[in-house]
Length: 416
Image 1 (tube, one colour):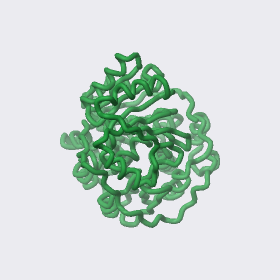
Image 2 (cartoon, one colour):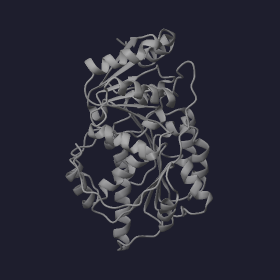
Image 3 (cartoon, helix red, strand yellow):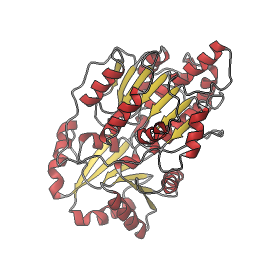
């Protein structure tokens, strides 16, 4: 898979604070499935893709060999400059499906103009719901574009705006941003987005759940109305998102790979009935005796995540909390510690875990039953990624059994 690569310096910023998605007493159903445009999901050798040679070199160096189904389906449309709405399960490689065609487009444009000098204006805008996902996307861009002269900046909240403002005024080629922080800059009149060529919304369903939809609409209204390639990606596709996608790109190709809003088939799902007062002790024993490898635990609230991480640490389990109230420095330390093995367990809220991309997560644990079907899909999608196997455990208090039943019925699961 991915190998260690050299890093080059870049401008990096910050993103929006997080909002907590409203909870509901019973999981809600997602929108009906729509007909997908004809596409081919057969794996393609990256070396055979009609993309710039520097991109193929970076892919080879990083150990990328063949495309995933969503990449096979989307990349031909994206390379042709077509608008795309992509729907696929979490962890299937959606980021590369839009990043590679965008980088190729910029390189091809530079070659046609006979220049490699910085343009001085931003050509691509990518929106993501959280700072973690914005950083992850920017990291992917940096890795694929390592042997090019293209520049990018991640714009997200929780850090000073000045370095971001400098990057935006300099006109980096690609801006990856969370909606709220980007609007903060736009109110200050710093960004120049009148020459944007490509606009991407990643994890659009989470942006809607987190209350960012009005911000997204305001940002979209400030972009060029012509000659703009638009791509929208999501693990689920509620009707409101489909309507907005139609407003942005009425003739976009809708590409659905796998079942809409369903967990990956590589994940084993388990549920245990445990009274609320006994869940911490049960989880502690489970982590010590049964679970191995990196483990991601989801808690419903930020206070609950802190409390659970402390209790696990007091029991001798190396654990860290990850939520929106922690400083950016603390969040980065938690994520890097999780990746390096310093922390065996991370206890996170849904918002904070968006974009958390850690190889080899063996278990996802729901400390409480998720309050929506989409939340369950996104949570368990942190394991079983890229066709690897994974496990999902849900701890169910007696009063949560009804919500569990809704998840079982929706996905055809028989939780053990």
